[in-house]
Length: 205
Image 1 (spheres, rainbow, N blue to C red):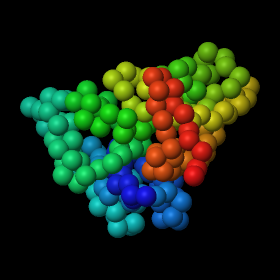
Image 2: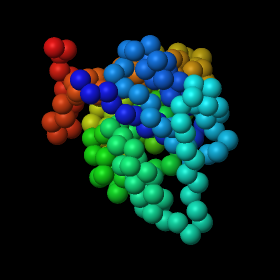
Image 3: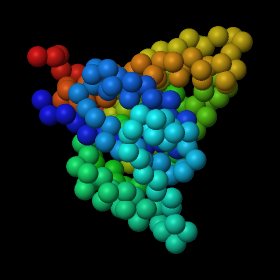
C-alpha cells in the first residue's frame, strides 16, 4: 500500500499535529508528514516540527492578496509536493472554495463538538450555554460550509454541572488526540467510503 504524503496546517500550538506525528513515528499510520504549513510564523507547533526535523513553510497573506489567491498559492505548492491528504490542526483561516475543490475529499478537520451541533467558533462555550449533558468532538471531511462536511468519527464527553469552558475544552482535547490520528489512519489505509453525507468504514483486509 502506498505511503500517503500528509500536509498539516496549523496556526498555534499544534497539539493535534503532535498527536498525529507521534502515531506516524510509531508506524501506526501508513504515512509521512511531508510538510507543515502555517499562516503564523510564531506558531508553537513550528518549533515542534523543527525538533522533529519535519519541513515547514509559512504562508502569510499579503495585503493585496485575496483569500482565493492566497490559497491558490498554497494549493500549487501542495501539488508540486504531490500531497495526498491535508490535515487541519488548529488552522485559523477558512479555506477558499478553490483549494477545497482541488483537494476534494482529501481534507480533514476536527471540531470540538458533536456536529452538526455547535459549528463555528467557541463550540464548547456554545454547548455550555445551551445546557447539553454531553458534548465531544468530530472528525469530518471539509466542504464549502462551516463544519458541515461528511462525518468520519465522533467521541462523546460528558458535561458536568461545574464545567467551565476551559475544563470542558481540556477533556474534549484529550479525546481529539485519540480520534484524529485514528481518522488519519483510516484515510491512509483507504478505508473511508463516502456516499452522500455518510462515511462508511471498510473492515481491514
